[in-house]
Length: 188
Image: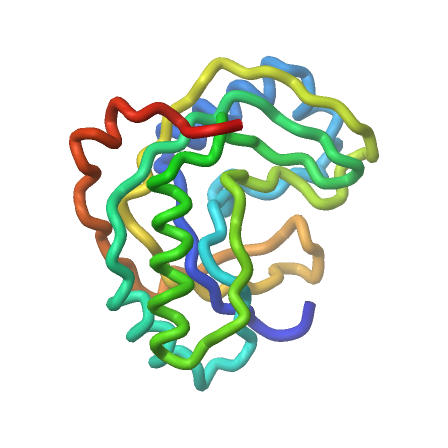
């Protein structure tokens, strides 16, 4: 990677990161990473593609300010090891999460930022883990995404594992509909 990258993310709170890190430890997978794990302070759910042009920041800010979506809850229930990419995975793909991703895409299109792809509910743990293919169940951990962040990502020390995010700005999402609280995680 060269230069900073700008993207929209949601980041779990310290409480949620500690719970996820505890499950990674309990599963024995943390020991197997041997330093290839991302710093938990940088764990995030991507909601947009990456942009590398700093001059786009004002358009990105306007797009984020125009996102009209409700908070959504994800339930992390497994760690999937897919070759060198290991990630926490959520149960299903809740309709409210799909609506959030679509709202980000629509707001970005309104600013002429096209070509955004969809995102699945996951938090990457490492892209350079020991290659293996397996799934490990974990204790379900709920996380409500109620805020989106525009961040600047940058390498620290020249290693992908040493990657940091600086928050440029943040926006609160609308409260979840009461029905969303009882809707369940959706299919999958």
